[in-house]
Image (cartoon, rainbow, N blue to C red; front, side):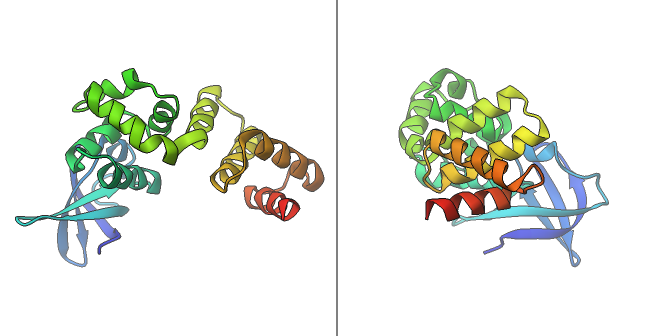
Length: 201
């Protein structure tokens, strides 16, 4: 399994890149979300990858963030009828945060506007992924819309981490606020989460 490539970006197109690693050029298919984050050709790049093995080809898919790769894998491994091509379309047509929010809020209209995703596929995505994305996705999407300050973003990230660990939204928010009052404004996200988990234990 090839989990990432670390080398020089040789060529970059909206749908694919070529990365040179120790004299070998790897052709990697990418979504537009990753294309927007690429360095200039000739510069160093670290690209997270997913290898798809077919009878006639081994295809590498690349992502600039772990959230993009995680969503890609969730789509191709969980949602029936969605292959790598549609999964790339999803990442090219909507941000990871907006996608999670759309699934959490059962927003079929937003999902069906993505190229290659019709109404039936959008409904299937919601049914098959809602439990996996759930409240964390809704909270993440709403916080993105609010345009948070750096301090509030830190609180938000700590709340998201606790929700991912099984806390309910209100419990997580209250626990983080109390932890920050105790630890002070200089506390890191890790400090806040650790304090909340210690108190809950």
